[in-house]
Amino acid sequence: MKKNANYEINFAINTITVTKRFLAAASQIGTQEYATMTELRKLQMPITVREIHRTVKETRWNYARMEGYLRNVMDSERYLADYAAVRDGKGYMGTWAWFKKTFPKYAEVPELDENHHYMILPCDYQEDEETVRKTA
Image (tube, rainbow, N blue to C red):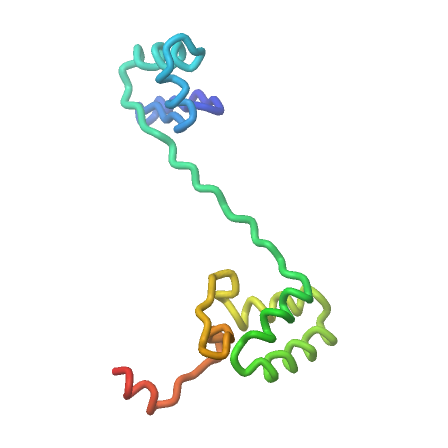
């Protein structure tokens, strides 16, 4: 298998894989990519475009940001008390792990209720049976 940053020739499965950027540059006559693409086409192999999946790096929140988030969550007093206990006992990494576990959708844009509190359901939220019956 011949590999380049812009294209890859896989003789085992008889294909050529190119990047979108390479393909765009190869569409311009006179460029180095155009010349390379011309040579690749002479191999008479199918050409596919590589899907690049970039991973999103997790951004950790500092204490102030976590506290601000918790102040705006429904039943904030309870979560702020839990947060303070975890923060005092486990340090930053333990607090961050607790926060992510308790609010797994913390990175999503939340809806607001009439009191401008985040309408977020923590992972330990349980609906009562009456609410479930009304919505069903």
